[in-house]
Amino acid sequence: MCGIVGYIGKKNCSSFLLDALEKLEYRGYDSAGIAVYNDHKINLIKKKGRISVLRNAVEEDENFDTDDSPFKVGIAHTRWATHGKPSDVNAHPFIGPSGKIAILHNGIIENYIELKKSLKRRNVKFASQTDSEVACALIDTLYDGDFFKAVKDAVNLLEGAFSLCIICADYPNMMIGVKKDTPLIVGYGENENYIASDISAFIGKTKKFCRLGECEIALFKDDSVNFYDFNGKKIKKDVITVDWNIKSSSKDGFDCFTMKEIMEQPSAVRDTITPHIKNSGIDIPELNSLPDDINKIYIVACGSAYHVGALVKYSFEKIAKITTIVDLASEFRYRSPVIDEHTLVIIISQSGETADSLAALRESKNRGAKTLAVVNVVGSSIAAEADYVIYTWAGPEIGVATTKALSAQLSIMYLVVLYISKKRGVISDLAMKKYIQNLLTLPDYILQMLECKDKVFEISKRYMDRDNIFFIGRGIDYAVCREGSLKFKELSYLHSEAYAAGELKHGTISLVEDGTLVIAVLTDKKLFEKTLSNICEVQARGASCFAVVREDKVSEFDVGVDDIITIPKVPSIFLPSLSVIPLQFFAYYSALLHERDIDKPRNLAKSVTVE
Ligand code: F6R
Image 1 (cartoon, rainbow, N blue to C red):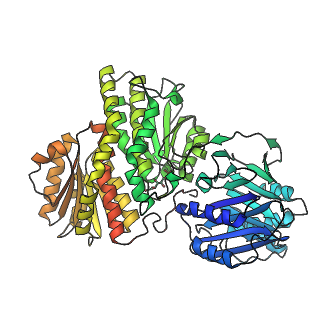
Image 2 (image 1 turned 60 degrees about the vertical axis):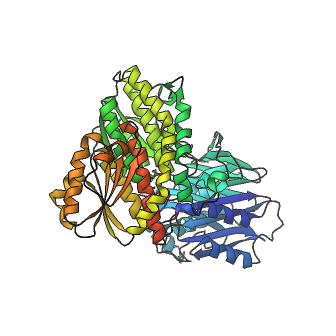
């Protein structure tokens, strides 16, 4: 969703800001803008559309970066519309009525209507339909020459979720960042400092960061940064180091990030599991203090991360023999889940910032449950607030549709299953040893699985005219189908549905007709014959079938399907890590053939920081 970036330092400010905005492009946006202090005033440009449109406008404008004051300061933003349609006027930054205050905002200000009414009574005029302009006008009206005080007083009047970044024409050496409920990160450079909504904006500039906590203010002055709470009391913050390199945030020869990230899955899995396997055993020090009396697991997440939960539920039940409930964070947070101090709530999230997942985490803590965050972004809000945190080491994921982060999440969750199984005393040493040996070879199997790429491209070409596809499977294969169908929809913009194969005949089979494409996943040995019968049923009604089948079952595949991709033999709990790959390729190539914007599918955002 919206991206914020701010710069204070001695270099060319607008060029830093525009480059950083491009690094945040993957979050999803519909307009962009920039405000830079220059020659005693704030210069502003904002444009609907791509950052390249903004860059051209800035490059043609003589009022950017001509200033010779020792420190240059500026802020820039990519907007993903919530209040008011995408347009130049609704884009950020906003400048207050006095022309002195410029702000950027991420989040939603819930009391903006009330504030707007009261500001209008004081003759403040508004040009946009946004809640953000109201926050700007509020700071501006409270400003009486003390920049910090105006911001501090204003944020205490705002309700809802907001990250703000603010500059003032009277303070060419200052910038202020504010965080409540949506992320904001400070980056420390050499004689310059930065602020942004995520660390991708600074990759290649610094590895040193500080994440603003709830209701905190960062005050940048010259080359220093100090932190305060909303009462203006100074607070101390730790600096964290994140070792993400430039290569991991560049396309590195690929046409797009999504394909690069699909191909990076072996290393994402290897980097995630290796630190936790020591002396042929599992080592998860992050869970050392997990109590012994956990008797229920809730896995709560959104989108693909939720599918990871749905996939590992089978292993928690089968191997760790523990009741496991998987829930969508957006549903969980408004229900009355039966959880207590004996429940472990696992929140899975790539970004660590998903608003619903964060709210579900808070709800779980309020209800006394123990909480474990499985996240990819170091120091993210979900990581900061959970009782226990385990990181996936997929590196930055830029493609909006998750691929390598999902594989990393799955692999770390296998380890958590085994860890809890051992803690509960329900797994033999021998079984444990075998699982670990197999898990260590999983990255090689994933690498082997990636070889199906070209074959899936050919298959995708044959079915590119189909606009309604069913993904069917049973058990864990059904969970894989749900992920395959989501990936297909979000990348190709075509309709598909995942169905538990046994459920089809209870209604949906009426949609199957000549030419319907059914993609069947059959990796569960026990359920093989059952799903095979379901394939026969859809074929009898004219459907074409593309099957993803385990290698050792292909010979029994006597029903005859149109296309087959085989999966190497690995223990059943690890099979989803392989069977998901042809489905990722199918989604990717279907999108490519329909000329979609694969890295940035329409209407989607990488980090969903609003409800
Ligand atoms: C799908 C996808 C989304 C995310 C979901 C959760 O490809 O990427 O469904 O999985 O928005 O995001 P995180 O994992 O950041 O909480």
